[in-house]
Image 1 (cartoon, helix red, strand yellow):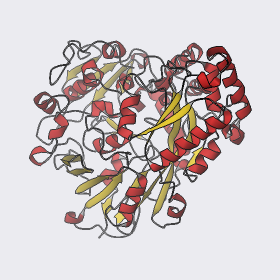
Image 2 (cartoon, one colour; image 1 turned 120 degrees about the vertical axis):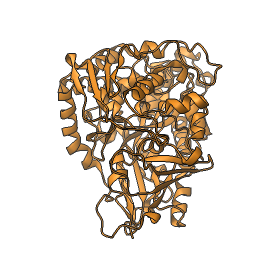
Image 3 (tube, helix red, strand yellow; image 1 turned 135 degrees about the vertical axis):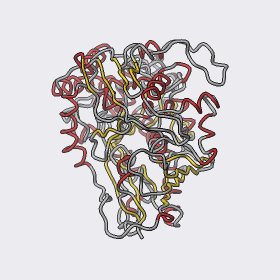
Image 4 (tube, one colour; image 1 turned 180 degrees about the vertical axis):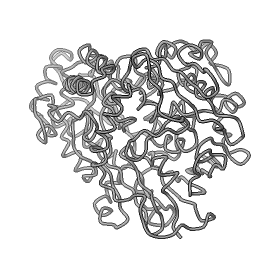
Length: 576
């Protein structure tokens, strides 16, 4: 979430473009022998701006940090390696695609099983995918599976029994567009020949297998609390053996895994609320791999001088999301005014240059990147990252004259909701000052909340008036940045964005089989979304991490901000 022809074209592009973005030196090579199995324990920090990951239910995961822990535990049919090649995982091979790109036939490896001995087969994946779309599951990621025939309508229906421990809809797509022809064969029919379907199911959590036996036993909201029971549970490289909700998740090698077992016996994920705390934990020897996410702005410049420092320019952006249904952002002039007031270079300076200033929605390095994109005022390149305070003031004056009786102080108050990390508190205050400078007298404020609250608010069904958040690539296709974000009906379109011209372009691009034509359509749609202010992008994000290569071999992160399963399986180990 492609015909096989276009997959090849995209992966060929990735081989040259995405890998070039990596600034990191960490990789699978390195001298030094492997330590004994008893010492194959690696402590890795996660920094989700909270004291815990949000969840481990694959069909309900919407954040990177939960995905990073869940992906080595719950198998998918496919995965991406470090260089964004699609690798069969629980599937035997790439799918057979027929009927002009409408039908995908997946062959599942024989003999797969959960750590409790329960088989993992075509029925498991049919159940899991259908469960992700079931309205009773209340997944914030359901739209990733909307290419499946009938999926959007099924997901948009009403759950009939929300008061039961494990609510399930009376409807189902199993036997209709999700068909198990035998225990090793899954056949899926799409609404249209969507060109992004296979990349979707190689990269998103909602398609990972979930254990029906645990869900039915313990219920929708409680089953993941029992993953560590009885020696742990999993179905892929590792199983969960501890999740204490106090900053610790422990994964232990799954001896029931069907393929090459990982060299690591155990991964201890240590969860920190902010990058500074993670950095200090690394310096104090509490973790083997430090930070693993956005850099702490206060120490970033000093950190870059260390020999154990690694960095990548991620396919990720930070942005402000205005809600088109909440005043003043229901008005184009107001949205444009608030966008043009932002000086991205100044924003980045407050963050100690720990990101790359940009106004692009599709980040540089992504297939389909639009180098000729223009900002609202027609500026391009570095000039487009500067504020245009004169234009912003003119636009907000026009809005005030039309909607506020000519008195800007009586216009609807704007409160930016952002997370409460030290860096985000500083940058949100900088944005506030930019708005005050460009639009004197306009009532503006900031509300800094913990990251969990921010995520819940954004995906509550009633998103904040405007919020600051980030998006990191799910799968290497511009659809992930455009149609998924801005088309009406997408579960990710929390801002109520609806532009008929952009909608038409995105809908056509989603099914276009010629890659060049697709990208041109997406470029046009992106230009409309910049002009109409779907997002106010502030920066392209960096990811940094630290580890001692004399002690740890093979650790690295891809430009999606996590470690590939193939690296966990084959390359990472503790040196002797």
